[in-house]
Image (cartoon, rainbow over all chains, first blue to last red; front, side):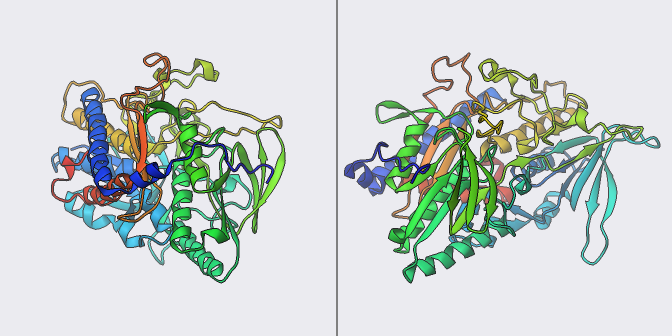
Length: 50
Length: 484
């Protein structure tokens, strides 16, 4: 493969981590959490650039 | 009565024009000049490029929207700026080339009181021999490019279903590209679709990039809070690719693309080639090639534009090594230092230097990721420049509004598989976009606002943002309530 890197030593998710990625109750919580984080980021910018 | 001319109807230009028309009374005029008749929500070209959306889902005609908003729309290409007017008339103007069907192109002047250069980039496919649609590789930069890429992808799906093995090479088509995030998004979505079509075992997928390390994304990488660790995006990105068995080639400059083969050199100066069945390689960006002339007709392009064609603004363009780069080098108001009534927003402004550390190989070939200007900061710049201009038109004695990329954060949601119940996306926030080691000595960024995770929630957010930003761009009721 030469130049091509297979990244075989990269961090890999466990089966539980993979499960959580599409587990609806957990993802519903993450949906609100990510949105909150983004709104805090936007709010911070509005404060800086009023 | 004042006239504001906005060159470009992309994210920055359309945002600026929309806010100007809503803030200013109809006694003032807002003019948008764009060669495209439609608005394109570029982030969703990734899905268009895999056949997951139609062109109608990522574009809409501009004229009706501008008509309702009282914005004059000129479908034309700007070619030259005359910021001092002419010998006969001191009012500044921009020359635009209009081309109506069946008629020869004509170049006409449009006078302005304020000018916003938001032309976006020239897709510089010519920088690499054989790169680009119509030659030997594909792109998702425009709707037509993305549709062609989707067609090619689906053709290969059918071949693989019949037993063929195919290699997909996705990434950057030159050593000084930006937009690695978009290429990354395309490669992980492509891999997801290969699994969805049941042909993943017949496909080899390679991410081909000019980044020094995966996860650079043109912003020198980042450290993110994740699961109790502060993790470099290099590890995060390697993990995402390894999990999906997407191999990678980094530190690569594509020199030439032939049918089915990429010829490239790397940072060690070695030359290699890589065969492919499908190559989606993004081009490097350059300015659109606007010229500028003074009142006497003398060429002053180099006074207003950097050699790469992007417009100089209030940045520190002093040449200095990476170790001396500062957050303060980056522009805040996007005002031209040469003419106070001219601004450049979005990709059109000239960055002072890259964000990522530059590298050059022993042959003298620069190979490193250049600075991204993604949707969120571009739209913010458009709004902030519009506010500065509106204040001046309204006679307010107020400082120019600021939106430095060293003071702005970005929220990026990179889809990694489109499905309402099985899809995922990588949701990242970064603050600030340009690292500021004076304020944040250890990591350059505020870790309270710099994080990332992958999950189905990200896909829902990406989809909602698609519909929400198109709603906003169509200037539907309440559009101003939606933040950039």
